[in-house]
Image (tube, rainbow, N blue to C red; front, side, top):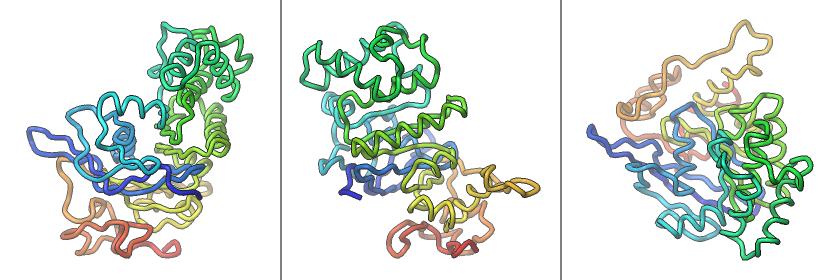
Length: 324
């Protein structure tokens, strides 16, 4: 892999409330290289999307970055605000959201939306921008792109709308792409095509991709590495084949066991007992210990295990070894 396009260092996000400070992202660190897809996975509320929104500067107040650093191509971006962040958001970082209808203006033709984005971020005239828009639609697999560029969003299927959104995210040729649940709103038959498209564009353009999802099948088919989050914390990270085939953190092992593909030939799927703790009621020690069959006294009190300082892959005092 090349040098990191994106470096997240000890990132923490806080939300002040009347009952205290909530921390949906707690000292998370990882890198994404050019041409690499890092899948970020975990249950709903694990902090996946909040971390992505922090990177791209889309945290909804009163949520705020409370600690850590975010570096994009060697430039620190977490202190940027207002117009500086807006220019960066389109030019250097592209974003794909879960529902394409929320990313497209239903009253404007898709060509107008593409051309407006291109003119905002690139030094091109309108004629060149219109030609570029057609090229982008063709690149993401819109049939008869030159004819369809005058269509409105409602004239496309869900999968085709998501391809238009991907074209929008690529307008300014960003170095980094954040895809937040890009296939969840789509039929299963369409999902594979969208994932294959993101993989191809990542390789051809040398972009770094943060792929946020709760679907382990998407992670296994698309990602180079996987970062597993739980209760705002990074609990395991590594090459996708290693993490999926030989998980070390008990939570990751539970995720693998609860996936339908892992249960073929078994009487029933395994499940992780209990529920993820609320942000306002985080337990001491390891956040996963109330649900963990391997938990011991050290897990329940004192220092929270973190990746690093001898824990290179899993943030666990008693990690699984070799599928144990």
